[in-house]
Length: 283
Image 1: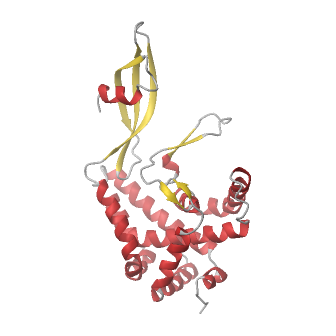
Image 2 (image 1 turned 90 degrees about the horizontal axis):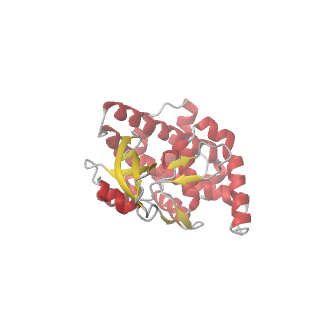
Image 3 (image 1 turned 90 degrees about the vertical axis):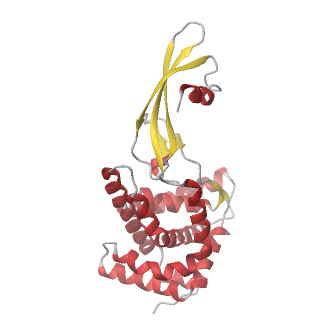
């Protein structure tokens, strides 16, 4: 990163200023990228007056070949029906769960493993659901919130995995990755209601009832659970390759907590009736 590089980036926002100097400070929150706060000193052309501005930058870490991650994701969609049966037992054993909860999840995973076509069905139902621009990595560390309580604007960072897809995937991902299970349990239903009201008022998507929204959301929860099971070893290898021991410990704990939240979300959201819609029956 150089002053010339920053000049090119900031020129459209500050056309009458030049970048005099800059400093950067790591935020230590990235997984496959280095996230930093960049403080830039700008000098006005002509009078020499200076001003300071700050922004967030995200740079790829050389130890993580980013392009290969897309190949890994592509391979997932080809292999997840065959990989899941061999992954779920170790996944559940690694999570602290009450015995009844683990028994319920074990039954679910056994059912999914016996009927791999249903794994495909879950993915297809999510993929064929409502469609919009989605962020793809929608969690709290990719959001900037104002320190002003009166300011309701939220800025989203890191659109590297954005695309066209089911917007409820972003919502399910957010609740699993960013929200403690107890907080999700307290707020989830109300948030879905507010989300549905916004869809109805702002996009005129009145064709989707609140019950339908709940059902499609549950499918996204189950789909995210399957993804986490199959990607678990990859996630933990990313944590193991973090830059510092502190970050390694934090990331490992984070990934394990996300896995636990996913389990709790499945337990809270999917009952016998939901599974029957996928062709399962309670044993």
